Image 1: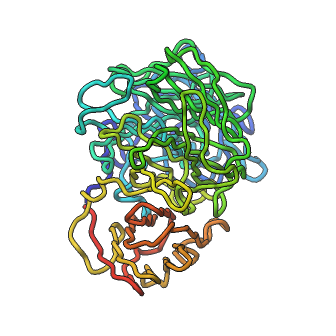
Image 2: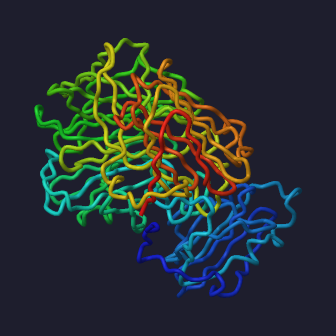
Image 3: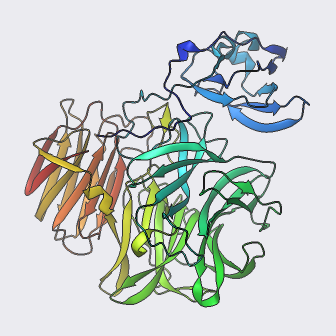
Length: 569
């Protein structure tokens, strides 16, 4: 099986090739400076996750500040290193916020002994739970997918129609390059030819004086890629950047911010072209509603309407919206994705959605206000958004495969978090309601290898179901995941309470339950080291849960069904 492809700008070397330790200038009990040695590419910063953040002001040769960042510098032990690219930086002005009475004298901190210069940084995977076929960052923290788009081999117009299917999928994501906890939000960037194997690219958009770079979207307009994102400073505002090289590098718009508000939660712009009104449409998450704006030139935006009052689940803040059309038996319906945290069906974060009509100005939901529909009934499926400009009119989505209840505590360190497998969306009718269908993207079928007798750390299991089916995955340590299908109740459940390491959070051990909207004839289960994703083959049910077994599940028992197991290549 192919591993995650690594970018050319990162080299495989050992940390042992780094040069000698750094001598700090200690200025007080919580303040130090480091004069940077020139001619080296990286300063390797030692991280200790239990410590509080140290605040860095990065100064250039004129002692002007060029960057701010926060790093959990090691006090008495090193969990891992992260690279700071020196560039034009001359001086680091570092302020510690921990309690010195507990941590000791600043001059004795482990970070000064372990902080080293190097021309390279080791990205070799050392993690037991790093997935083999899911997208992950090379290192550091990752959360929401951002700005996803497909770039065909030939340019497209702003109608968003892509003709060829031999182009490149672009995925940006919320990334902390300086640790494996949420902080220092930038847009990381990866590209893929097949939605499965991803190549890491250089950082796409970094923080500026308007704030950190929060979630957003990209549109393809001729040869340009235009990114819209939230600048998260004292207030959240919307900004724009343009790429002339296919999304590899961006130049920020001189007129940023392009939209402002007095609301505290005002973020995650998602854009598309609406042909009937010959205008761009932006949908924004604002507290517990979605707001819609329109523009002819991407610079001047006009408020159109809001949606959300009394509709769906309001247990938390609404985030990461998406709005797009799908066809059902020749009829066009519009889908509004609304990610919410907290408020998910089993606690924490999740993706709800609404179905209705959009006229270029206003979204109208066809369901009663109190109806709540969830895209995925697992604990670990959030921030779902779709690729702009996908070929063949497909609507392809990725989700962040974690939950804010414990995302910072999961038992990994070199990296934290992965994306779900790609999923294609459609619509189906059940009773009087219309629902989203969620299927593994066709690219996943191309991953199938030979049949095997037992599960492995990365495989697909296809189960032909009967009215009552129980599937138990286990290992020699007695760790297990139990999946149960009840045709009479029309439910599917997954119990991970004894799945392995569940003690890092009280919110982690649980059983999740999904409605099946009719019978399940066949179940597709994707296993990848730390995750299990289960789908009704017809798309009527999806469930995504993380697991952290001490060894892979290599035993399967099926009652009331027949399983076929495939390796994934």
